[in-house]
Image (cartoon, rainbow, N blue to C red; front, top):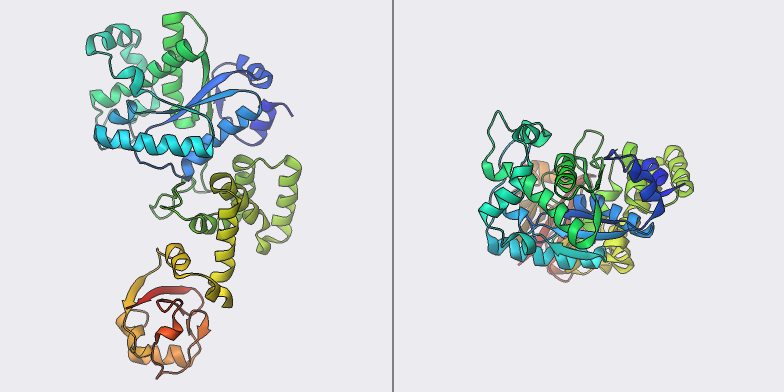
Length: 408
């Protein structure tokens, strides 16, 4: 397949600005950019799913630029329903430094900051040199603006489109950047940049947008109970990322292999067959986790996450350190206990059981385990010998309810 055919097969192209772009993508040699605003000091897995296309195009002979928007981040791209909260210049600069280091490490490409070429433009020059090229009716017709007209949109947010168009123009003039790539929600901003280049320079630029990667219900990939899955392993461990990936819904896993890995069509077809015939093996899920975690954190972190996963809920848990367990299970219900407490008192005091009667039934019925060892004695006393490194107790009630206790 050609580059374009491969991208289409993987479901990575929703729209392009001009049919001429197809041949240019296949030929290689384009300089293109993809961007994000520094709203945090780490990217999350949603960024990864979008930015991975930079690696694909680089492998096809194109030159990528990653733009971290120190200027646009001070304004905020309009959300469909409400205004984004403003963040301080100091926080934006701090976040930029974090994202730059992370992007260079994971993607290995040049990173630029639009604050560098925007900060010295005064308001009169902005209006004369850029604002005059934007027709208000044209701006009002853009989806992001239209969605906010009823609830209201500030002038600052309204101007965001011009700022992003200015970026495309600047990179076109200074880097011969002729293509902008983004998620489908950026189509209006991209076409505004293309129009600005045409009007000011009488030149042709191109845009390409990808569908947003979502689950079967349309929820963005990586959104898990409101918590972001960060690419910084100190914020989201490789184990947490592994657990998210291997528990993705079966119906979407082949789509994710296409969009989020470099596996060949033949390899993905084999996983599709296996996923259909033996879904319980979760082979496709495990391969997805291996590909993504290895790409982000390296093979050593992947092997570590796999080892924790295989050990945590088996008798191998004693091979793990307390740090591994605590960092991996920090989202579990957790509490502290004192050595010498009776097992029934522990279960009731921490809400694992509603009463001592229920606690007795649970213990006597083999429904309670500590560090994967069944506890059947209702008179058992909790000691540090039961705890990993004298401190960590992984308590299980029934088949699925886990709690993390730290001994004082």
